[in-house]
Image (cartoon, rainbow, N blue to C red; front, side, top):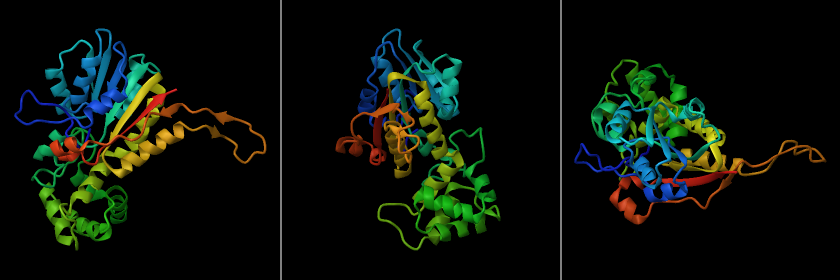
Length: 319
C-alpha cells in the first residue's frame, strides 16, 4: 500500500482517496482483456477498479491485502465475478498462485508500496504522528508486535541502526537513547508520546517537515519488515509471471526504489557464473527486461494529492 492515497472515492465516506500514478501504472501492465492480474496492494481498490474496467468477461483479477479493513471494503464494494480478494501479505503471492494453479500464468502484478491513506488518516492505526492513537503501526493489526511492543524489546544499538538505515535519520543515536529510556518505563503509549519525544530531543528541524517523520517511517518499516517482504515478492514475481507478463511497482522512498531498481537491473542482465574463468563455462540468461524509464507523478497529480510527490513507478516484463 502506498504513502499516497491508495484507493478511489469511497462510497461510504465524504473523503476522496486518490490512487497514485493510476493511469500510468495500469497502462504499464499492458492489460489483455482475458488476462490474469494481481493487485498486490488492494487498499481501497482504486487500481483494481481501473484494471477491471479493461478486463473482458473472461479476465480475472486477484486483490491482496493484509489489512482486515481493506479486505472487508473489497467484499462490500467489489461484487464482480472476475474479482476475488485474498487476505494476507503479498509476500506469499507465489503461495496464493500455486493454490490456484497460476504460477507462470499471471499476466501482470501491481505493487503500490507503503501505507495507505485510510491507515494514515485513522488515528487508532498508530501510523500518524499528527494524530493521537495507540503506538501500533502494523499493516495487519492481528499479526506480529506493535510498535510499542517492538520498542520495548529492541536494544538501543539495533534501534540506532534502524533509524539510520530505514529513516536516514542523522540524529539516530540521540533519538534512540531517549526512546529506550522512556519505553523501558512503559511511558510511550501513543503516537503523540513518541512524536513529542522525538521533537524534544532533535536539535534541528527541517523546514516543512515534522521532526518525527523519519523516525516514524523507520519504525514502521522495521515493525512490518517491509524491505524484506519487498525482496521476497520481487523474487516471487519471476516465478508467477507468464512470458510477456508485466511487473509494475510504485515506490515512495529511496530505500524501496533502490531495491526495485537493482532487482530489475540484475534480472535483466546476462550473468557469467564463472567470471574469472578464461573460458565461458555457464551463463544465466536474463528473465526480465526493463520497460521504459522511471515514471513520476505530474505536477497536477502532486497538486491534487501531496502524498504522491515522492512516488516513482518502475515497470519490467517477463521474458
